Length: 90
Image 1 (cartoon, rainbow, N blue to C red):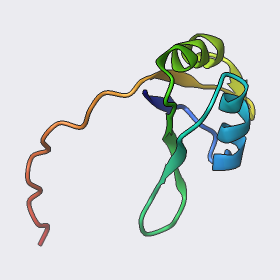
Image 2: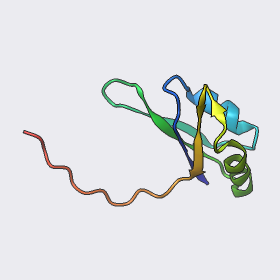
Image 3: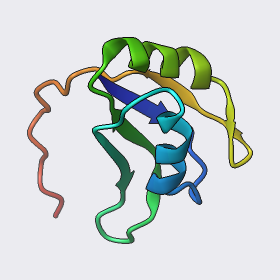
Image 4: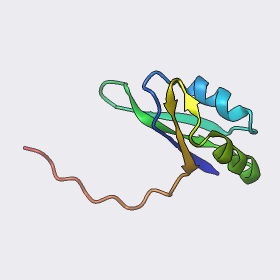
């Protein structure tokens, strides 16, 4: 199951997420979304857990918990829909 993790402090690393989520089971991947120009975290990321029951436990255990001073939001990630074409800026 792919989990969305939001309201992350900019100082949170993928290793911090890996440590928090590994208490609930096996992790397949951890990815913090970053600005492509500055490399700065955008304040959210995704954690992939192969076992759905472990992922559900992680949602219940971590949603609203504090990570580096901020209450994080954890829920099942929604699939990306078709995004509208972007108009070029002139």
